[in-house]
Picture (cartoon, rainbow, N blue to C red):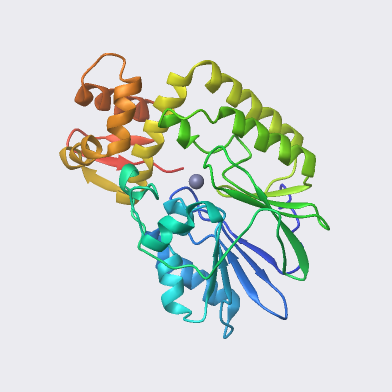
Length: 309
Ligand SMILES: [Zn+2]
C-alpha cells in the first residue's frame, strides 16, 4: 500500500474533494486552529469532522488561505457554532468582507454561494504564528488569487499550499479570466515554493504529497502551456466553473443549469473573450460537450449528472 505521508503531531488533514477545500486542523495544548472551512453546502460535514476530532474541546481559531467560496463557505457556520472563534483572513479583501461586497468577493461573478461572515484579525504575509506547537510563516502567493497566502512550517518543512500548488497543477488563474495578467505571479509563487523547499505539501484539494520537485515541474509545464495559449486557459476556467456548480447540484435539469450558466457574469465575460465567434448558448453547449467527453458529467438529454471519481 502506498504510504500516506507522515504528518507531524497536532496536524490533521480532512481531505474533502473539489467542491470543498481540504480543512487542516492544528492543535496543541494551547489552542485549536482550523485552516479553511470548505463550501457552504458541506458545512454540516465540516462541523461533524471537527467535533469528532476535537471532542469536547472548542475550535479557537479559523484562518483562511484565501476567500474563494470553497475555502471559506463554512466560515459563517463555524462562527455560529463557536461564538468565541477568532477568525483571521488575508488582508487583501478585508474591506470587502467588512462591507460584504459579494461582487468584489467573487461570489456573485462566479455564481457561487458564501454566507457572510466576519473576521477578527488579519493573516499578514511576513507574520509568524504558533500553532500545533510549532511556528507557521505566512507568505503571499498571488496568481490563482491575488490575495492568497500559503503557510510554511520550517521545522518539518511542511507547506499548506492552498491552490498555488497541487500535485497535478494549480487552481485556475482567476485574474487572467478577467483580462488581468497573472501568469507571471503564478510563476513567482512556484519559485517561492521551490525556495521554501517543503518536504511535504498539504494542498487545498487532493491528498498531501511529497515529490515536490516533480509537482513543481508539472505545474510549470502547465503554466507554460496556458501562457502560450490563453484561450485554452479561458476554456478551462469556464469548464471549472461549470463543473463546480454541477458538483454542488449533483444532478440538475439541463434547461435550469443552462439558465444559471448563461446568467453568470464570469461565463458571459469568458464567452466574450474566448467565445470562438459563436453565440453564447452555442458556446455553452460546446463547453458542456467537452465536459461530457472528458467524463466530468453525464448528459441524459434532460438532466445533467455530475460524474465524480
Ligand atoms: Zn481558490
